[in-house]
Length: 256
Ligand code: MN
Image (tube, rainbow, N blue to C red; front, side):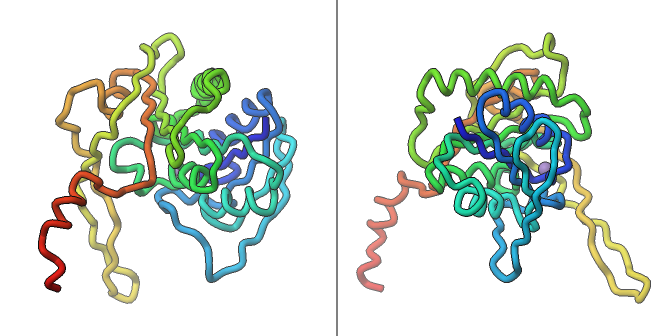
């Protein structure tokens, strides 16, 4: 089994190194990750600048490249130029912080996994649902087990679908179980602090806190993780709303 590991926190982040080391027990791993942190970069790619790559030594990982680019660049370049034989799995994480609900649209972690499925490789995005929690070993163990189940079930996922996994940041004994979930909503205060630079020009800094999610149903990823379940959401990059297509066709647009 050949596995491409990436993230958006940068190649030096403990989460991606713990993941790559754990995945090395399952097969041949290539760790291909941004040289700098790219959290909240979404699905951005680099098209106007050179994408420099640096071979890096990481303990317990057979091959690693730091990429001066985005998480999506890492997967694209990785599968095309650096790790070119058949790749069986792209896995992005373990992110420092949750990727739940609408936040998946901003997430570099999730976007890297989306890039994997765009290129036809089964993909997972993995996040640890607390910031600056130091122990990634529980999340790494859970992902290891999940992949064993994926192998047993022959990675059966529809084309264009990936799994977005969020692991609660607690001891293993406090994890209640897992839930297959729906994306919830992440609402923020959307507050910006206005400041002034030394020349008197204003600039803004996003400071809004997360607002509590009103739904309490465990079917939502946000709630499942709050209640110490591992949340597994199958997501797809096809954003088409099929249900409304027929209705729009009936608007009489022939007259345009
Ligand atoms: Mn991140």
